[in-house]
Image (tube, rainbow, N blue to C red; front, side, top):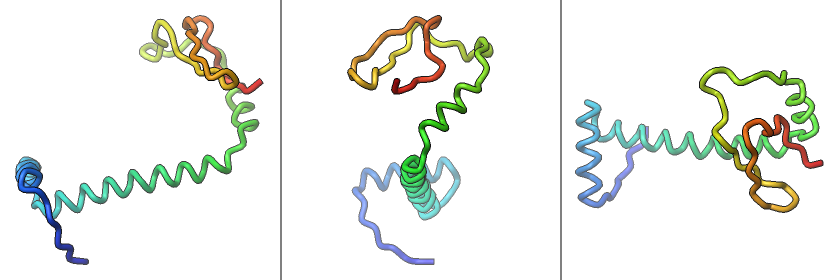
Length: 107
């Protein structure tokens, strides 16, 4: 376990104290948890970006085409329109729900 000296603005220190008391934990535990959560989020983004570099878009498209074309489950229905950014033109196109493409391809 390491010790870290930390300087905080008084207003932030007060808020942290209030939140830690509300959670019934020490300020130290509150800060350690907050740092762990932030670190986890940043490492997750880095991990996913690294994995995305190795992705096979063709394989992904083939897998998506295997998904059955069935109506969405209750609660999963699309909104009135969805925005789709056209890959080549970089323009936003409005699609009514009946015309939403299941698989977006670069063709």
